[in-house]
Image (cartoon, rainbow, N blue to C red):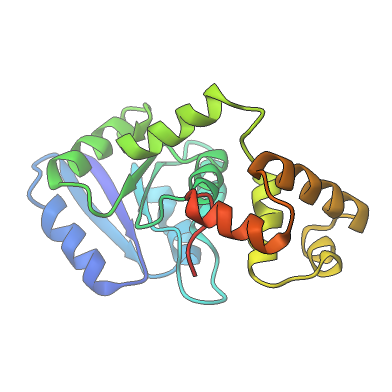
Length: 207
């Protein structure tokens, strides 16, 4: 029996997942969490955590919760289940230690298969997510690093270089250096163009 924890801040989503997963004879939903913090607290008693990425404003992000759960001794596998398929979100989750990344529009049979795959210790990636990661591997020199994506995300949110430096504990010179590399990789020459190009290419979420 695979013990599951559903972590999502929307009760309707959790109810829908429960309806789908309860139909599987080898699944047992033993806990639900409406916040990432609560998911971390409950993670020790399950085999797989189905983790959303975005919780309420000001709350812990799903990627941070994933990292905390992945660091637990003998902890469960984390399967990210979200609506976000940007490169920034995928990288954050995978680097945090997620065993899988699935989109919420996945059919029930794909979801069930991903849970079993994650529970067995293997990776479970949605085809679109796998394609993005393969693209990065094929052209690593052109791909933005996780740090560059973090800088660009703050640029999108309207932060100045000084504010970004404080937020990421970097020097202003380092922030400028990251922006130079970002511009070169995206083929742009301004902050506005960089954000527009990254959003168009699916590197950043649309706001």
